[in-house]
Image 1 (tube, rainbow, N blue to C red):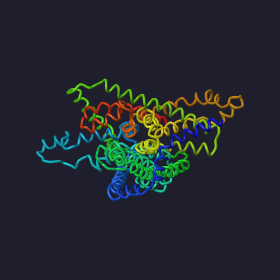
Image 2 (cartoon, rainbow, N blue to C red):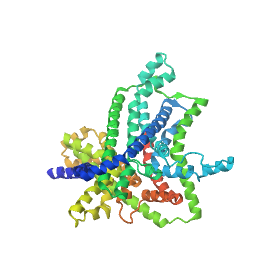
Image 3 (tube, rainbow, N blue to C red):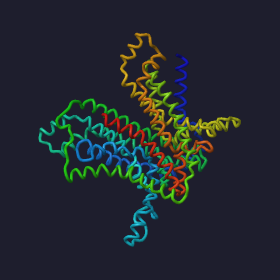
Length: 534
Protein backbone atom coordinates (compact mmCIF):
# COMPACT_ATOMS: atom_id res chain seq x y z
CA UNK A 1 0.00 0.00 0.00
CA UNK A 2 2.85 2.38 0.83
CA UNK A 3 4.51 1.59 -2.52
CA UNK A 4 1.29 2.37 -4.37
CA UNK A 5 0.99 5.69 -2.55
CA UNK A 6 4.59 6.56 -3.42
CA UNK A 7 4.01 5.71 -7.08
CA UNK A 8 0.87 7.85 -7.09
CA UNK A 9 2.80 10.75 -5.60
CA UNK A 10 5.55 10.32 -8.21
CA UNK A 11 3.03 10.39 -11.06
CA UNK A 12 1.38 13.52 -9.67
CA UNK A 13 4.75 15.27 -9.31
CA UNK A 14 5.78 14.35 -12.86
CA UNK A 15 2.52 15.67 -14.27
CA UNK A 16 2.72 18.86 -12.21
CA UNK A 17 6.44 19.43 -12.84
CA UNK A 18 6.13 21.65 -15.97
CA UNK A 19 3.88 24.18 -14.23
CA UNK A 20 6.02 24.12 -11.08
CA UNK A 21 9.17 24.74 -13.13
CA UNK A 22 7.59 27.73 -14.85
CA UNK A 23 6.71 29.22 -11.47
CA UNK A 24 10.17 28.37 -10.13
CA UNK A 25 11.74 30.57 -12.81
CA UNK A 26 11.00 33.55 -10.56
CA UNK A 27 13.43 32.10 -8.01
CA UNK A 28 16.22 33.06 -10.42
CA UNK A 29 15.32 36.71 -9.96
CA UNK A 30 18.39 38.94 -10.28
CA UNK A 31 19.49 42.15 -11.93
CA UNK A 32 19.60 40.48 -15.33
CA UNK A 33 16.08 39.10 -14.98
CA UNK A 34 14.81 42.51 -13.84
CA UNK A 35 16.43 44.15 -16.86
CA UNK A 36 14.80 41.60 -19.19
CA UNK A 37 11.39 42.15 -17.63
CA UNK A 38 11.75 45.95 -17.89
CA UNK A 39 12.75 45.69 -21.54
CA UNK A 40 9.77 43.43 -22.19
CA UNK A 41 7.49 45.86 -20.35
CA UNK A 42 8.68 48.76 -22.49
CA UNK A 43 8.65 46.88 -25.81
CA UNK A 44 6.66 43.69 -26.47
CA UNK A 45 4.65 43.03 -23.30
CA UNK A 46 1.97 45.73 -23.80
CA UNK A 47 1.40 44.42 -27.32
CA UNK A 48 1.05 40.85 -26.11
CA UNK A 49 -1.43 41.87 -23.42
CA UNK A 50 -3.48 44.07 -25.76
CA UNK A 51 -3.57 41.48 -28.55
CA UNK A 52 -4.50 38.63 -26.21
CA UNK A 53 -7.25 40.59 -24.44
CA UNK A 54 -8.64 41.97 -27.72
CA UNK A 55 -8.67 38.50 -29.24
CA UNK A 56 -10.43 37.11 -26.15
CA UNK A 57 -13.05 39.87 -26.25
CA UNK A 58 -14.01 39.29 -29.88
CA UNK A 59 -13.91 35.51 -29.54
CA UNK A 60 -16.16 35.69 -26.47
CA UNK A 61 -18.61 37.86 -28.40
CA UNK A 62 -18.58 35.46 -31.35
CA UNK A 63 -18.95 32.18 -29.46
CA UNK A 64 -21.67 33.54 -27.17
CA UNK A 65 -23.66 34.86 -30.14
CA UNK A 66 -23.42 31.74 -32.29
CA UNK A 67 -23.59 29.18 -29.50
CA UNK A 68 -26.48 30.73 -27.56
CA UNK A 69 -28.64 31.51 -30.58
CA UNK A 70 -28.22 28.07 -32.15
CA UNK A 71 -28.81 26.27 -28.83
CA UNK A 72 -31.96 28.28 -28.13
CA UNK A 73 -33.26 27.69 -31.66
CA UNK A 74 -32.90 23.89 -31.68
CA UNK A 75 -34.10 23.51 -28.08
CA UNK A 76 -37.03 25.91 -27.78
CA UNK A 77 -38.42 25.63 -31.31
CA UNK A 78 -39.37 22.96 -33.79
CA UNK A 79 -38.78 23.52 -37.51
CA UNK A 80 -37.80 21.42 -40.54
CA UNK A 81 -34.24 20.14 -40.24
CA UNK A 82 -33.98 20.69 -36.48
CA UNK A 83 -33.07 17.07 -35.70
CA UNK A 84 -30.20 17.17 -38.20
CA UNK A 85 -28.95 20.54 -37.01
CA UNK A 86 -28.84 19.36 -33.38
CA UNK A 87 -25.87 17.09 -34.09
CA UNK A 88 -24.48 18.95 -37.12
CA UNK A 89 -23.79 21.98 -34.92
CA UNK A 90 -21.08 19.85 -33.26
CA UNK A 91 -19.15 19.30 -36.52
CA UNK A 92 -16.74 22.26 -36.05
CA UNK A 93 -15.31 20.38 -33.06
CA UNK A 94 -13.75 18.00 -35.60
CA UNK A 95 -12.05 20.86 -37.48
CA UNK A 96 -8.83 22.12 -35.84
CA UNK A 97 -8.83 25.90 -35.68
CA UNK A 98 -5.55 26.17 -37.56
CA UNK A 99 -7.01 24.18 -40.45
CA UNK A 100 -9.89 26.67 -40.65
CA UNK A 101 -7.27 29.43 -40.69
CA UNK A 102 -5.40 27.82 -43.60
CA UNK A 103 -8.61 27.45 -45.59
CA UNK A 104 -9.94 30.98 -45.15
CA UNK A 105 -6.55 32.60 -45.61
CA UNK A 106 -6.23 31.09 -49.08
CA UNK A 107 -9.91 31.61 -49.92
CA UNK A 108 -10.27 35.27 -48.89
CA UNK A 109 -6.81 36.75 -49.53
CA UNK A 110 -6.10 39.29 -52.28
CA UNK A 111 -5.09 36.63 -54.81
CA UNK A 112 -7.76 34.16 -53.63
CA UNK A 113 -10.69 32.99 -55.74
CA UNK A 114 -13.28 35.27 -54.09
CA UNK A 115 -11.53 38.60 -54.58
CA UNK A 116 -10.20 37.60 -57.99
CA UNK A 117 -13.67 36.66 -59.23
CA UNK A 118 -15.26 39.85 -57.89
CA UNK A 119 -12.61 42.06 -59.48
CA UNK A 120 -13.02 40.33 -62.83
CA UNK A 121 -16.82 40.47 -62.61
CA UNK A 122 -17.22 44.11 -61.59
CA UNK A 123 -13.93 45.60 -62.79
CA UNK A 124 -12.88 46.63 -59.27
CA UNK A 125 -9.27 47.40 -58.39
CA UNK A 126 -7.21 46.80 -55.28
CA UNK A 127 -8.07 44.75 -52.20
CA UNK A 128 -11.80 44.50 -51.51
CA UNK A 129 -11.45 44.02 -47.72
CA UNK A 130 -8.69 44.04 -45.08
CA UNK A 131 -6.25 41.17 -45.00
CA UNK A 132 -7.75 38.14 -43.27
CA UNK A 133 -4.39 37.50 -41.58
CA UNK A 134 -5.10 39.94 -38.79
CA UNK A 135 -6.63 40.12 -35.34
CA UNK A 136 -10.19 40.22 -36.64
CA UNK A 137 -9.50 37.26 -38.92
CA UNK A 138 -8.08 35.21 -36.02
CA UNK A 139 -11.10 36.12 -33.87
CA UNK A 140 -13.52 35.08 -36.61
CA UNK A 141 -11.74 31.76 -37.19
CA UNK A 142 -11.56 30.91 -33.48
CA UNK A 143 -15.23 31.88 -33.00
CA UNK A 144 -16.33 29.53 -35.79
CA UNK A 145 -14.20 26.71 -34.36
CA UNK A 146 -14.99 27.13 -30.65
CA UNK A 147 -18.69 28.08 -30.47
CA UNK A 148 -19.71 24.40 -29.83
CA UNK A 149 -18.44 24.79 -26.25
CA UNK A 150 -21.19 27.34 -25.60
CA UNK A 151 -23.73 25.46 -27.72
CA UNK A 152 -23.32 22.21 -25.78
CA UNK A 153 -23.66 23.73 -22.32
CA UNK A 154 -26.47 26.13 -23.20
CA UNK A 155 -28.44 23.37 -24.93
CA UNK A 156 -28.08 21.13 -21.87
CA UNK A 157 -29.14 24.00 -19.60
CA UNK A 158 -32.21 24.79 -21.69
CA UNK A 159 -33.24 21.14 -21.86
CA UNK A 160 -33.03 21.06 -18.06
CA UNK A 161 -34.75 24.46 -17.61
CA UNK A 162 -37.57 24.75 -15.10
CA UNK A 163 -40.70 23.88 -17.11
CA UNK A 164 -42.97 24.97 -14.28
CA UNK A 165 -41.54 28.49 -14.49
CA UNK A 166 -42.17 28.63 -18.24
CA UNK A 167 -45.68 27.36 -17.69
CA UNK A 168 -46.27 29.83 -14.88
CA UNK A 169 -45.08 32.69 -17.09
CA UNK A 170 -47.51 31.61 -19.84
CA UNK A 171 -50.40 31.41 -17.41
CA UNK A 172 -49.57 34.91 -16.19
CA UNK A 173 -49.93 36.22 -19.73
CA UNK A 174 -46.26 36.55 -20.72
CA UNK A 175 -45.70 36.42 -24.46
CA UNK A 176 -43.25 34.11 -26.18
CA UNK A 177 -40.46 36.68 -26.43
CA UNK A 178 -40.77 37.59 -22.77
CA UNK A 179 -40.75 33.93 -21.72
CA UNK A 180 -37.57 33.34 -23.70
CA UNK A 181 -35.62 36.44 -22.63
CA UNK A 182 -36.93 36.75 -19.06
CA UNK A 183 -37.26 33.07 -18.08
CA UNK A 184 -35.41 30.60 -20.32
CA UNK A 185 -32.20 32.44 -21.21
CA UNK A 186 -31.49 33.75 -17.68
CA UNK A 187 -31.46 30.11 -16.55
CA UNK A 188 -28.73 29.50 -19.14
CA UNK A 189 -26.45 32.34 -18.00
CA UNK A 190 -24.14 30.02 -16.00
CA UNK A 191 -23.88 27.75 -19.04
CA UNK A 192 -23.03 30.70 -21.28
CA UNK A 193 -20.33 31.83 -18.85
CA UNK A 194 -18.87 28.32 -18.55
CA UNK A 195 -18.83 27.74 -22.30
CA UNK A 196 -17.30 31.15 -22.98
CA UNK A 197 -14.60 30.50 -20.36
CA UNK A 198 -13.71 27.19 -22.00
CA UNK A 199 -13.50 28.89 -25.40
CA UNK A 200 -11.30 31.64 -23.97
CA UNK A 201 -8.94 29.10 -22.42
CA UNK A 202 -8.58 27.51 -25.86
CA UNK A 203 -8.03 30.98 -27.34
CA UNK A 204 -5.24 31.79 -24.87
CA UNK A 205 -3.67 28.38 -25.53
CA UNK A 206 -3.90 28.74 -29.31
CA UNK A 207 -0.66 28.85 -31.24
CA UNK A 208 -1.48 27.71 -34.78
CA UNK A 209 -4.02 30.40 -35.72
CA UNK A 210 -2.20 33.28 -34.01
CA UNK A 211 1.17 32.32 -35.44
CA UNK A 212 -0.15 31.78 -38.97
CA UNK A 213 -2.05 35.07 -38.95
CA UNK A 214 0.84 37.02 -37.42
CA UNK A 215 -1.04 37.98 -34.23
CA UNK A 216 1.43 38.45 -31.36
CA UNK A 217 -0.36 36.83 -28.43
CA UNK A 218 1.23 35.40 -25.30
CA UNK A 219 1.58 31.95 -26.90
CA UNK A 220 3.45 33.21 -29.95
CA UNK A 221 5.51 35.53 -27.73
CA UNK A 222 6.64 32.63 -25.55
CA UNK A 223 7.59 30.63 -28.64
CA UNK A 224 9.62 33.53 -30.05
CA UNK A 225 11.29 34.33 -26.73
CA UNK A 226 12.49 30.76 -26.34
CA UNK A 227 13.38 29.66 -29.88
CA UNK A 228 14.05 32.93 -31.69
CA UNK A 229 15.61 35.16 -29.00
CA UNK A 230 17.02 32.18 -27.04
CA UNK A 231 15.91 33.77 -23.77
CA UNK A 232 14.45 31.13 -21.47
CA UNK A 233 13.96 33.56 -18.57
CA UNK A 234 11.79 35.85 -20.68
CA UNK A 235 9.87 32.82 -21.99
CA UNK A 236 9.24 31.59 -18.44
CA UNK A 237 8.07 35.02 -17.28
CA UNK A 238 5.70 35.32 -20.22
CA UNK A 239 4.48 31.79 -19.51
CA UNK A 240 3.76 32.79 -15.91
CA UNK A 241 1.63 35.73 -17.03
CA UNK A 242 -0.25 33.51 -19.48
CA UNK A 243 -0.75 30.94 -16.74
CA UNK A 244 -2.29 33.67 -14.57
CA UNK A 245 -4.79 34.57 -17.31
CA UNK A 246 -5.65 30.90 -17.85
CA UNK A 247 -6.14 30.50 -14.10
CA UNK A 248 -8.64 33.35 -14.09
CA UNK A 249 -10.55 31.74 -16.96
CA UNK A 250 -10.52 28.39 -15.16
CA UNK A 251 -11.85 29.97 -11.96
CA UNK A 252 -14.65 31.61 -13.96
CA UNK A 253 -15.50 28.30 -15.65
CA UNK A 254 -15.60 26.36 -12.38
CA UNK A 255 -17.76 29.01 -10.70
CA UNK A 256 -20.16 28.99 -13.64
CA UNK A 257 -20.26 25.18 -13.65
CA UNK A 258 -21.19 25.12 -9.95
CA UNK A 259 -24.01 27.58 -10.59
CA UNK A 260 -25.09 25.50 -13.59
CA UNK A 261 -25.31 22.34 -11.48
CA UNK A 262 -27.34 24.22 -8.88
CA UNK A 263 -29.77 25.46 -11.53
CA UNK A 264 -30.11 21.96 -12.97
CA UNK A 265 -30.88 20.45 -9.58
CA UNK A 266 -33.60 23.02 -9.02
CA UNK A 267 -35.06 22.39 -12.47
CA UNK A 268 -37.05 19.20 -12.12
CA UNK A 269 -40.37 18.04 -13.31
CA UNK A 270 -42.17 18.28 -16.63
CA UNK A 271 -44.48 20.97 -17.86
CA UNK A 272 -46.82 21.29 -20.78
CA UNK A 273 -44.73 24.14 -22.13
CA UNK A 274 -41.54 22.07 -22.23
CA UNK A 275 -42.22 20.90 -25.77
CA UNK A 276 -40.57 22.93 -28.58
CA UNK A 277 -42.82 25.48 -30.23
CA UNK A 278 -43.61 24.77 -33.87
CA UNK A 279 -42.36 27.43 -36.31
CA UNK A 280 -43.73 27.98 -39.80
CA UNK A 281 -42.77 29.79 -43.00
CA UNK A 282 -40.40 32.74 -42.53
CA UNK A 283 -39.85 32.05 -38.82
CA UNK A 284 -38.80 28.46 -39.59
CA UNK A 285 -36.56 29.67 -42.43
CA UNK A 286 -34.89 32.22 -40.12
CA UNK A 287 -34.26 29.61 -37.42
CA UNK A 288 -32.79 27.20 -39.96
CA UNK A 289 -30.54 29.96 -41.34
CA UNK A 290 -29.25 30.96 -37.90
CA UNK A 291 -28.35 27.35 -37.11
CA UNK A 292 -26.94 26.49 -40.53
CA UNK A 293 -24.56 29.46 -40.80
CA UNK A 294 -22.21 28.34 -37.96
CA UNK A 295 -22.03 24.86 -39.52
CA UNK A 296 -21.31 26.32 -42.94
CA UNK A 297 -18.62 28.71 -41.69
CA UNK A 298 -17.04 26.40 -39.13
CA UNK A 299 -16.99 23.08 -41.01
CA UNK A 300 -18.57 22.79 -44.46
CA UNK A 301 -16.82 25.70 -46.22
CA UNK A 302 -13.32 25.03 -44.76
CA UNK A 303 -13.66 21.34 -45.60
CA UNK A 304 -14.66 22.11 -49.20
CA UNK A 305 -11.80 24.63 -49.58
CA UNK A 306 -9.21 22.13 -48.37
CA UNK A 307 -10.74 19.34 -50.48
CA UNK A 308 -10.58 21.59 -53.56
CA UNK A 309 -6.96 22.46 -52.81
CA UNK A 310 -6.16 18.77 -52.48
CA UNK A 311 -7.92 18.00 -55.76
CA UNK A 312 -5.92 20.67 -57.58
CA UNK A 313 -2.70 19.44 -55.99
CA UNK A 314 -3.44 15.90 -57.11
CA UNK A 315 -3.90 17.08 -60.69
CA UNK A 316 -0.70 19.11 -60.87
CA UNK A 317 1.82 17.31 -58.62
CA UNK A 318 1.79 13.71 -57.48
CA UNK A 319 1.39 13.30 -53.72
CA UNK A 320 4.29 11.74 -51.85
CA UNK A 321 2.32 8.95 -50.21
CA UNK A 322 5.42 7.56 -48.51
CA UNK A 323 5.92 10.78 -46.55
CA UNK A 324 2.21 11.02 -45.77
CA UNK A 325 2.23 7.44 -44.50
CA UNK A 326 5.20 8.28 -42.25
CA UNK A 327 3.43 11.36 -40.84
CA UNK A 328 0.29 9.32 -40.23
CA UNK A 329 2.24 6.52 -38.57
CA UNK A 330 4.04 8.98 -36.28
CA UNK A 331 0.75 10.64 -35.30
CA UNK A 332 -1.01 7.35 -34.63
CA UNK A 333 1.98 5.90 -32.78
CA UNK A 334 2.31 8.90 -30.47
CA UNK A 335 -1.46 9.12 -30.04
CA UNK A 336 -1.91 5.44 -29.18
CA UNK A 337 1.10 5.37 -26.86
CA UNK A 338 -0.09 8.46 -24.99
CA UNK A 339 -3.72 7.36 -24.85
CA UNK A 340 -2.83 3.93 -23.43
CA UNK A 341 -0.58 5.50 -20.77
CA UNK A 342 -3.14 8.23 -19.96
CA UNK A 343 -6.02 5.77 -19.62
CA UNK A 344 -3.91 3.42 -17.50
CA UNK A 345 -2.96 6.23 -15.13
CA UNK A 346 -6.55 7.51 -15.08
CA UNK A 347 -7.91 4.07 -14.17
CA UNK A 348 -5.33 3.76 -11.39
CA UNK A 349 -6.09 7.22 -9.95
CA UNK A 350 -9.86 6.79 -10.18
CA UNK A 351 -9.75 3.32 -8.62
CA UNK A 352 -7.60 4.56 -5.72
CA UNK A 353 -10.02 7.40 -5.09
CA UNK A 354 -12.93 4.96 -5.28
CA UNK A 355 -11.66 2.37 -2.79
CA UNK A 356 -9.85 4.80 -0.46
CA UNK A 357 -11.77 8.09 -0.54
CA UNK A 358 -9.89 10.82 1.28
CA UNK A 359 -9.08 14.49 0.94
CA UNK A 360 -5.59 13.61 -0.33
CA UNK A 361 -6.88 11.37 -3.12
CA UNK A 362 -9.53 13.90 -4.10
CA UNK A 363 -7.07 16.79 -4.12
CA UNK A 364 -4.39 14.90 -6.03
CA UNK A 365 -6.85 13.72 -8.67
CA UNK A 366 -8.11 17.27 -9.17
CA UNK A 367 -4.53 18.55 -9.41
CA UNK A 368 -3.75 16.08 -12.19
CA UNK A 369 -6.91 17.09 -14.03
CA UNK A 370 -5.91 20.76 -14.15
CA UNK A 371 -3.28 20.01 -16.80
CA UNK A 372 -5.84 20.29 -19.60
CA UNK A 373 -6.24 24.01 -18.84
CA UNK A 374 -2.49 24.61 -19.24
CA UNK A 375 -1.52 25.72 -22.79
CA UNK A 376 0.85 23.44 -24.65
CA UNK A 377 3.46 26.17 -25.00
CA UNK A 378 3.66 26.48 -21.18
CA UNK A 379 4.11 22.72 -20.87
CA UNK A 380 6.98 22.92 -23.36
CA UNK A 381 8.68 25.72 -21.43
CA UNK A 382 8.17 23.86 -18.15
CA UNK A 383 9.87 20.75 -19.54
CA UNK A 384 12.77 22.50 -21.25
CA UNK A 385 13.53 25.01 -18.50
CA UNK A 386 14.99 22.50 -15.97
CA UNK A 387 16.94 20.87 -18.80
CA UNK A 388 18.73 24.17 -19.41
CA UNK A 389 19.48 24.50 -15.70
CA UNK A 390 20.72 20.92 -15.53
CA UNK A 391 22.97 21.32 -18.57
CA UNK A 392 24.57 24.40 -17.02
CA UNK A 393 25.17 22.69 -13.68
CA UNK A 394 26.13 19.30 -15.14
CA UNK A 395 27.33 19.47 -18.77
CA UNK A 396 27.76 15.67 -18.96
CA UNK A 397 24.07 15.07 -18.24
CA UNK A 398 22.10 13.15 -20.86
CA UNK A 399 18.69 14.44 -19.72
CA UNK A 400 18.46 16.84 -22.65
CA UNK A 401 19.07 13.99 -25.08
CA UNK A 402 16.34 11.81 -23.60
CA UNK A 403 13.76 14.61 -23.63
CA UNK A 404 14.49 16.09 -27.08
CA UNK A 405 16.01 13.25 -29.12
CA UNK A 406 13.42 10.62 -28.13
CA UNK A 407 9.65 10.58 -27.80
CA UNK A 408 9.94 10.67 -24.00
CA UNK A 409 9.61 14.46 -23.72
CA UNK A 410 6.81 14.57 -26.26
CA UNK A 411 4.76 11.84 -24.56
CA UNK A 412 5.39 13.52 -21.20
CA UNK A 413 4.01 16.80 -22.52
CA UNK A 414 1.00 15.02 -24.03
CA UNK A 415 0.24 13.31 -20.72
CA UNK A 416 0.36 16.60 -18.83
CA UNK A 417 -2.07 18.14 -21.32
CA UNK A 418 -4.53 15.33 -21.93
CA UNK A 419 -4.67 12.96 -18.98
CA UNK A 420 -7.57 15.11 -17.74
CA UNK A 421 -9.69 13.87 -20.67
CA UNK A 422 -9.06 10.23 -19.78
CA UNK A 423 -9.62 10.91 -16.08
CA UNK A 424 -12.93 12.65 -16.71
CA UNK A 425 -14.23 9.84 -18.94
CA UNK A 426 -13.23 7.17 -16.41
CA UNK A 427 -14.80 9.10 -13.52
CA UNK A 428 -18.03 9.42 -15.49
CA UNK A 429 -17.97 5.64 -15.91
CA UNK A 430 -17.48 5.17 -12.19
CA UNK A 431 -20.50 7.36 -11.40
CA UNK A 432 -22.63 4.72 -13.13
CA UNK A 433 -21.38 1.98 -10.78
CA UNK A 434 -23.21 2.23 -7.42
CA UNK A 435 -21.19 1.84 -4.23
CA UNK A 436 -23.50 -1.00 -3.26
CA UNK A 437 -21.77 -3.06 -5.95
CA UNK A 438 -18.44 -2.68 -4.16
CA UNK A 439 -20.00 -3.50 -0.81
CA UNK A 440 -21.63 -6.64 -2.20
CA UNK A 441 -18.33 -7.69 -3.74
CA UNK A 442 -16.50 -7.29 -0.45
CA UNK A 443 -19.03 -9.48 1.32
CA UNK A 444 -18.11 -12.21 -1.17
CA UNK A 445 -14.39 -11.79 -0.54
CA UNK A 446 -13.49 -9.72 -3.60
CA UNK A 447 -10.94 -7.03 -2.68
CA UNK A 448 -8.39 -4.68 -4.27
CA UNK A 449 -7.08 -5.98 -7.63
CA UNK A 450 -9.83 -8.58 -7.98
CA UNK A 451 -12.43 -5.90 -7.32
CA UNK A 452 -11.16 -3.92 -10.29
CA UNK A 453 -10.57 -6.80 -12.72
CA UNK A 454 -13.73 -8.80 -11.93
CA UNK A 455 -16.25 -6.06 -11.08
CA UNK A 456 -15.21 -2.59 -12.22
CA UNK A 457 -13.42 -3.33 -15.49
CA UNK A 458 -16.36 -5.06 -17.27
CA UNK A 459 -18.52 -2.03 -16.42
CA UNK A 460 -15.86 0.50 -17.47
CA UNK A 461 -15.06 -0.84 -20.93
CA UNK A 462 -17.20 1.70 -22.80
CA UNK A 463 -15.88 4.63 -20.77
CA UNK A 464 -12.33 3.41 -21.29
CA UNK A 465 -12.85 3.16 -25.05
CA UNK A 466 -14.24 6.70 -25.12
CA UNK A 467 -11.23 7.93 -23.11
CA UNK A 468 -8.80 6.27 -25.51
CA UNK A 469 -10.55 7.87 -28.47
CA UNK A 470 -10.65 11.37 -26.97
CA UNK A 471 -6.98 11.36 -25.98
CA UNK A 472 -5.90 9.89 -29.33
CA UNK A 473 -7.67 12.59 -31.33
CA UNK A 474 -6.44 15.47 -29.18
CA UNK A 475 -2.85 14.23 -29.28
CA UNK A 476 -2.96 14.01 -33.07
CA UNK A 477 -4.21 17.63 -33.28
CA UNK A 478 -1.76 19.07 -30.71
CA UNK A 479 0.60 21.56 -32.40
CA UNK A 480 2.88 23.57 -30.01
CA UNK A 481 4.31 20.60 -28.08
CA UNK A 482 4.75 18.55 -31.26
CA UNK A 483 6.39 21.46 -33.07
CA UNK A 484 9.06 22.03 -30.39
CA UNK A 485 9.66 18.65 -28.74
CA UNK A 486 9.45 16.23 -31.66
CA UNK A 487 12.61 14.23 -32.30
CA UNK A 488 14.38 14.26 -35.64
CA UNK A 489 12.37 12.60 -38.42
CA UNK A 490 9.25 12.37 -36.26
CA UNK A 491 7.01 14.87 -38.03
CA UNK A 492 3.29 14.51 -37.37
CA UNK A 493 0.25 15.43 -39.43
CA UNK A 494 -0.33 18.60 -37.38
CA UNK A 495 3.28 19.76 -37.69
CA UNK A 496 3.46 19.17 -41.44
CA UNK A 497 0.10 20.82 -42.05
CA UNK A 498 1.38 23.92 -40.21
CA UNK A 499 4.76 24.01 -41.93
CA UNK A 500 3.37 23.46 -45.43
CA UNK A 501 0.67 26.08 -44.95
CA UNK A 502 3.23 28.54 -43.55
CA UNK A 503 5.29 28.02 -46.71
CA UNK A 504 2.17 28.84 -48.81
CA UNK A 505 1.90 25.25 -50.04
CA UNK A 506 -1.79 24.87 -49.22
CA UNK A 507 -2.33 22.08 -51.75
CA UNK A 508 0.22 19.90 -49.98
CA UNK A 509 -1.04 20.98 -46.54
CA UNK A 510 -4.58 19.94 -47.47
CA UNK A 511 -3.91 16.19 -47.21
CA UNK A 512 -2.66 16.11 -43.58
CA UNK A 513 -5.26 18.73 -42.65
CA UNK A 514 -8.14 16.67 -44.01
CA UNK A 515 -6.73 13.56 -42.35
CA UNK A 516 -6.90 15.36 -38.99
CA UNK A 517 -10.47 16.43 -39.73
CA UNK A 518 -11.57 12.89 -40.55
CA UNK A 519 -9.99 11.58 -37.35
CA UNK A 520 -11.65 14.37 -35.39
CA UNK A 521 -15.06 13.28 -36.65
CA UNK A 522 -14.90 10.12 -34.52
CA UNK A 523 -15.43 11.76 -31.10
CA UNK A 524 -17.96 14.16 -32.62
CA UNK A 525 -20.01 11.19 -33.86
CA UNK A 526 -19.75 9.62 -30.40
CA UNK A 527 -20.88 12.85 -28.76
CA UNK A 528 -23.77 13.38 -31.17
CA UNK A 529 -24.92 9.81 -30.57
CA UNK A 530 -24.89 10.46 -26.83
CA UNK A 531 -26.97 13.61 -27.32
CA UNK A 532 -29.52 11.76 -29.43
CA UNK A 533 -29.85 9.06 -26.76
CA UNK A 534 -30.27 11.63 -24.00
